[in-house]
Image 1: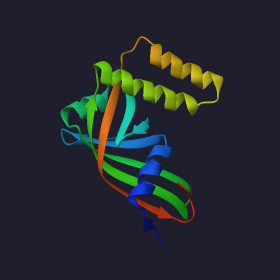
Image 2 (image 1 turned 135 degrees about the vertical axis):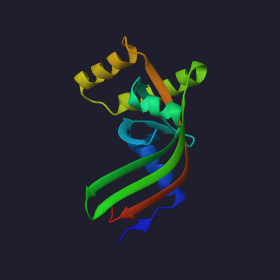
Image 3 (image 1 turned 60 degrees about the horizontal axis):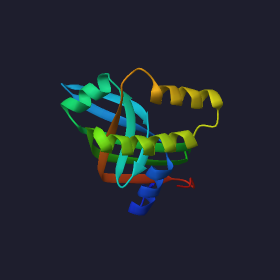
Image 4 (image 1 turned 120 degrees about the vertical axis):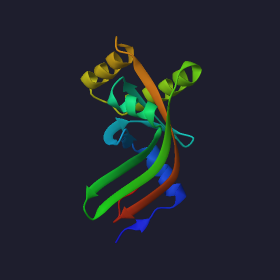
Length: 147
């Protein structure tokens, strides 16, 4: 039987993980997409190219975020939070991009994957930084999985 996570467990779990699923809703359509992220100060930061995700976030910045870790069906953690997204620019974007680049490069030990990340960060396509202020966070845990 799953049990609720404490606020401290939720914060540590979000900070330790690196993939979230964003649930965006706009124009009667729902879109769920995974993103790699960095977390600081109650805010989740991710990169995005132009596309459906940004189109929907601009139309309706309110979203739902889900983060989980599953070892097996009897051992898992899951956090769900409501959030409000903003596409950053200027100094705020540079600061968040630095945080993201640092976090993501520490998670990649394969040289080819690291090269693809560096290419994306310095490539021709315009890469945006999205920040999502999280609120109403809830979490549950089943089994002995650690935060």
